[in-house]
Image (cartoon, rainbow, N blue to C red; front, top):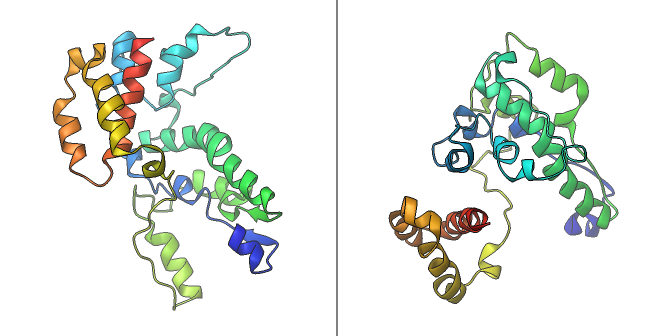
Length: 221
C-alpha cells in the first residue's frame, strides 16, 4: 500500500476472498488429526472446523450472554468443503483478512476494493450447480484472466506472512521456547520430540514450533 501511494494511485483492487470463494485452500479437503488435538484434549470430541476449538475449549469459560459463537450445522451443506468455505466467510474473512487489509490501506489513504466479494458473484458461485469447484485448483480463474491478458503468468504464490524470523531468534528458541515445550504436561502425553526435530531441519520450522508452543501454553492454563 505504501508503494501504491508512492505511484500516485488512490484506489486499488485486491484478491481478498478469491481463495475462499473458489476453494483455493487445500485445508478444505479435511480437518487433520493434528488440528484435532485441541478438541481431543478438551472433551474427547473431534473438530468439524477450526473454530470448534473455541466453542469446545476456553470460549465456554466466558459469560455466554456477552460472547456468542453460533455455528452452522455441517449437515445443512452439500459437502464438507462447502461447509468449511462458509465458516471462512463467516469468521476468517471479516474478522481477520478484511480487517487488516482495510486498516493498512486506510493508513496510506488508499481505497482497496475486493471484487471477489461482490455479493452477486458470491451468490452465483455459492449456489452454482454447474461450476466446477475443485479444492486447490483455480484454473477456472487463471483461464478467465489469461483470456483478457495473455502476457500474465501464474507462478506459485507465497503468502505475505508475519516475519517471524525477526521476532523469534535461535537463542530464544533454544533457551526458552523448546525447553518449555519439552517440559510441558502436554509433551509428557504426546512427546513432541520427533515433530520438533523434523521442523528444526526445515525452512518453515519456526511457524510449526510456535504453534506447538502456543498449544502447550494453552494446555498449562
